Image (tube, rainbow, N blue to C red; front, side, top):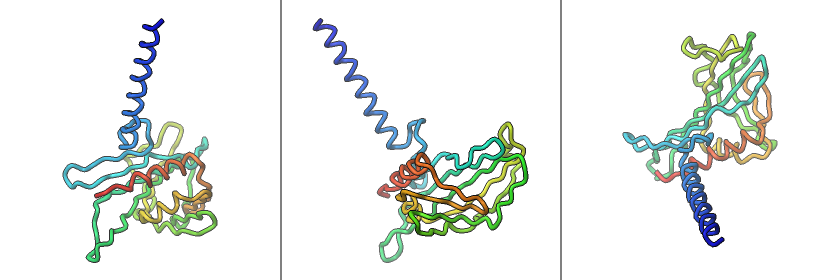
Length: 190
């Protein structure tokens, strides 16, 4: 009986040790299950934080995803204050019909307050290299940006609505939770 108890305690300690190491990897963004990836660029010393694609619209005739990336270089102004880095937001639209993206402007309403996300950095573009997924005929991408401080404010919201051109939607809790993880991952010391 004592042998069985020792074995159970040993197995439990091993599992807890693995969980702790997995947790450390997840915080660093190296766990494949995390939607946030944090990498250090060995050449520039910058930290690159990436949010994997999040489904915003998932219908049989239209899939719209959003991913984010920021390169934290620790730049400062002459007065010592930090530069507010730009977060690139990439939207990928796959559909079967023609979709009009209107003014191609990105807007957020966070807990009732308007936050302008800026205009397109590159507009919606079709690429021959980015073939649509099976079941879709067209694929277009849009890249826009917000400041890191804006993104942090958006991620803190409890009720976040977004408009991209004519598309209006409310971000679900999973997307908001992943955006919060992304925002927390940008709190690095450069």
